[in-house]
Length: 72
Image 1 (cartoon, helix red, strand yellow):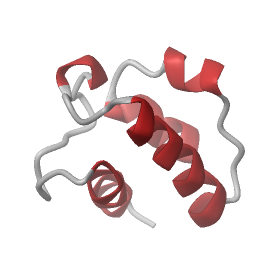
Image 2 (cartoon, rainbow, N blue to C red; image 1 turned 135 degrees about the vertical axis):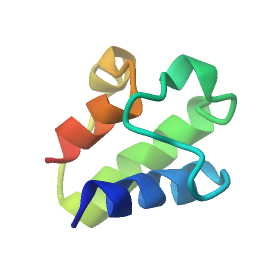
Image 3 (cartoon, rainbow, N blue to C red; image 1 turned 120 degrees about the vertical axis):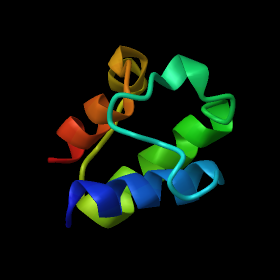
């Protein structure tokens, strides 16, 4: 899966317009990146990438690129 496809999945998970996120986008600037979105991100990682994501790891994410790096 390409980074573009991963970003599209993240956008879908956050229910935001396709093409609105870039790897350098800071998560603090994304209004939709709230507690429900973080839970959805945990599910996304588990179901689509078979990766376990913890709250501590989410708090360490600063940009969309950090999520992409975690996804591998």
